[in-house]
Length: 239
Image (spheres, rainbow, N blue to C red):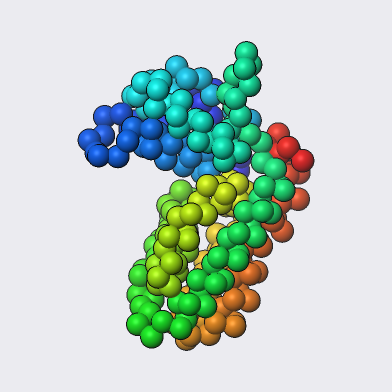
């Protein structure tokens, strides 16, 4: 199953953020929507970005749009070449590995702290596991990805270091694109749910050692799948 959503297709893939009433800056809302669209492959690697089309879809002016694009350039997800244009960068496995290292290091540390928390409550994690099962049953890949993210975020919340989860998001988007690309593969979601269940079981039991082993294997799954994904989608990869 090959992703086919791209701004160049003319389909509307972005949500309007300019008409949302909030105290959040327009450029922040634009950045969050564009970053989300790139990381979940609504906008594909290598896609050209037109300021006119983006402004039309997002219902914003050029100023906040350009500020948001500048932030995406800093993350390495977008490039702007004078006289050529703006495009989404291809997936680089070096960037993915850097992101994997950061995520694995922070999440295993957060998991250990969460295991030591006597007031740890895994009920929200059990709910998210059930939501993942529901998404799997109805073939809702987008819903599964959201519930997957929420489960890992909750581990950080239980540890008391939710800020660490938020700090790593810009780098983690490189890894997220590879993760998202792997989801339509046969049996991938089933395997991920089983891994999530084992991680939650370990947290409930306070098993920091066993949980760390499961988290490490889980964090490295996407890179293990990379060669097959690169062979299947060579146009999305830079190396």
